Image (cartoon, rainbow, N blue to C red; front, side):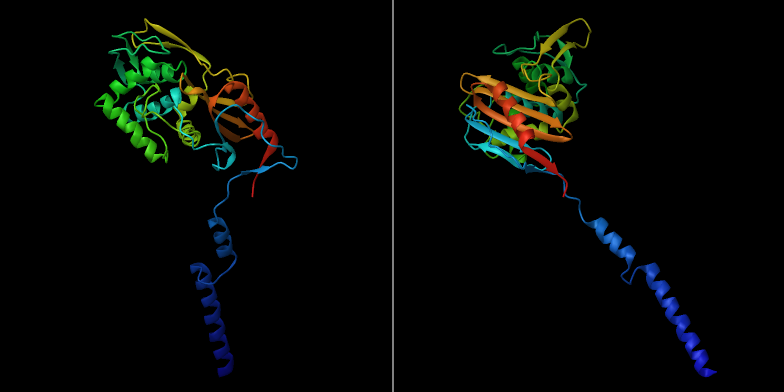
Length: 300
């Protein structure tokens, strides 16, 4: 009888021990295994060379970077660290800094106009929103809009330019410096294909900038509703190349032809930084087609 009672007590104790440990998850089991699997981070889809991979077409551009936006993997590069005048691609940094200091709906009264180069059509005394200025700057590449933003969205012009350079360092653009917000050539105005690819990737992560740079043309209206600015994008590839979503052109006497582009096909985005080219649109188009023909995106 004592043996039976002892066995019964031991059995009850052992069963209770298992239940307690199962509830408190002290004993490894299926639930813990499942949790461990859930804790493993999922690797992103990444580009892999196609089975019949061919080399990229030759281009006249002096510097090129082609990268996968999701992983940052470089698909192609040609002298990516050579310093160049960045021309109007500078305006992407101007847009980022302006949006850190001003709300898109802030009203700006236009002061002195910088009339050199491309214009959106501002006149001194116009009252427009920051978003209108961003659109005029990024669609029509208006230098008047770039300077107006730098005057309005900072304590001073010099402070705004200083913020541009601080932002460049923050983004890891180690071979970049700005001395004006529009992209005019200057001794201290320089960047690289690698740095500008980083800038493009960050700029289009902002929904407003992403929407604006993909716009082919627009009619912008001042705050009073009495003045309209008709702006058209210089980027000839918008609406012509499958999946192309902007980003920014640039051209000065010293920079040659520049094009930063973003293209998305089947959920996979490629960013191209093409500097000092003789045929920026044709060469960018050929590199876009090459990238999607020679890489496939794989889920690990």
